[in-house]
Length: 423
Image (cartoon, rainbow, N blue to C red; front, side, top):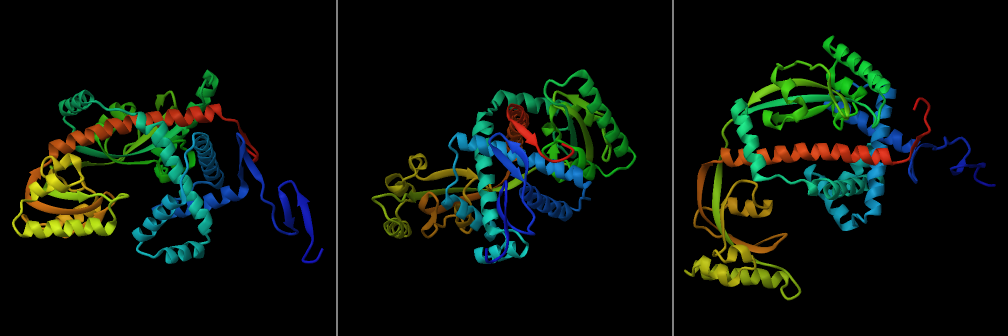
């Protein structure tokens, strides 16, 4: 045949001399290909190098990345079965936002990716998969988590009694996991591995590299870094151990149903009171629908702005004309807002106004608005923020536990066959 010799193979037709791609794992009805693993390994190595984390041994990193690929395959399979889809409009908007955050045009962003050897089409599918998995986790785990006011009260009371509510700590974590239904002999074998990890760490082995090499935790490829947390946000399992540790200390083994944990207290810092500038504002909203076009909404608001400037009462006009049914009853009053409470475009317009001043018409995802600032104040939001963070801490703790259990159950119920040597 003209153009070169072709060979038939189990994975299709390839040109002579070109390495064959191959299946390295079967995940239910799907597969992981060698090319997928190699591409993901390149990405992870780049990330670790940018973080300044020494690369773990090649075999250990390969196992970490392959396990993460399998985990993603299982989640995408469940998403497909439950009807979760990400349309092209959502995907395009997300990618445009990523480009904007990097201060480049979409064309420039695409060129940068391709110069780095990253296929733009593959990048699109990776982002689509990330959005899909995020939506799946939200549906399967996050939306099922509830936190009551009583839980927050008890939580804060406990922290106040312990006297550490204003303390923040940074933890790093390694998990050496045990399989479900493990025999005593299997658990003991895992314990021996975990004890050797502790021994190496206490001799000075780099914790981040060890986490990237050995840990089965979700943050393994980030060096096990759990980030800054208040003492009241520490997982219950670790709380008693952290209480007796100093910055730089590494714990002894901590056993749970998931396996053996090792934590490092990276650093400690104190929190300060939070004084924020609050803004008291009111607005008029005109929504866009089948009967109201963009132009007519803007024109209506321009006319209302002229009436306000002519002396008409903003509150009376809001009651009569605003499509925000909740605030319209109160004359468009939005109450006192903290920074970040309102959508960015709205907040940007509001922050540019002096007290008593009304904006020109502007658009957000909700429709067209005019906003008037009534007053501003410096406010101690420490208590409000404390409760909010308390709620977040409880929710995050519950969510992390539920998420780990969910992933573990999904993996236990799946058919996974490795086709790489050493697995």
